[in-house]
Amino acid sequence: MPAVVHEGDAAGPAGTLFASLYGELAPHPWRDPFVASSDAYSLFVARSSALGWLTEAMPDASGGLWGMNDAGQDRPAAAGASPSRAAWFQVSLTEPVPNRRPLPVQPFLACADDVVARIGTLRLTAVQLLLPVQLLLPVQVSPVEGLGISPRTPAVGSLLQDAGWFADCAPRHRTRVRVTVDGGQDPAIRSAAPAMLDWLRKLDQHVFSDDSLSPANDDHPVLEPAVIDELWQGPARHRVTFQGALAEWTLDALGWLAALLAEASARHGVGIPLLVTASRSTSRTG
Image 1: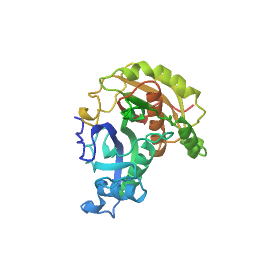
Image 2: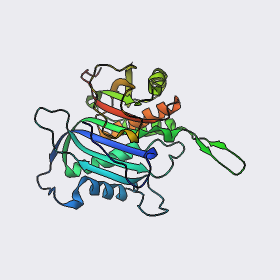
Image 3: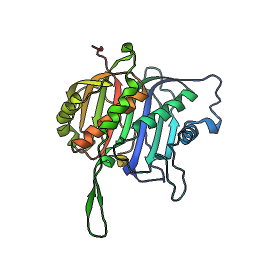
Image 4: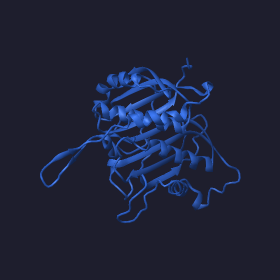
């Protein structure tokens, strides 16, 4: 059964950013799990506040990237069960996505990574993300003179600049990955995927080299959605799978890749929340 995550009071589902981290989490032996101030929720609030990414929960608050909804840890799965969800985090974006900047998936996962490192040592096997891609589309506005469209400048230039962070990754860290993008009951992602793949291949970047696409539902097992259907157009139905090599198997690189896929989706007319699941591929790197 998928875990049920409820939307907090801070905002509606339109700006929900959600992450589930899967793998084996070995808690630090010195840590007391019963101290409330060191649970996943409190640690995420403290860390995102320290980095300037948290919007304060007060009327007319501004600044930051997100308001806190919820977070938690799951109990380890029984022996033989796979995969086990180690932790999950949910926030609501509180400001419009700025021109030339991507969805803040990379800072979101960086904060989650810091929190998990405080709790223990995670052997990451998969990540599932809910991305509010609809926030990247032009916005309908209502000025006094009549309706109009507020344009948004795409963030591909910023993402290519940000890709420089991964320029010095050791070649041995390059990892084959499978990235499944699910539009739920909306088939738009399946019709857009071939053009998305062509566009991605033309970008001058070395973080993710995508070499194949499965536009139809294949037989490879995919994690069940960890969010309720009301937060996207669930249940899961229409999905595509991109395969390629990622510069490194880290939440940092996965956050960059997820933001790029969100930009590619919006650029090719997909304007719905997308559920993205990334896992290591069984194929070897070339």
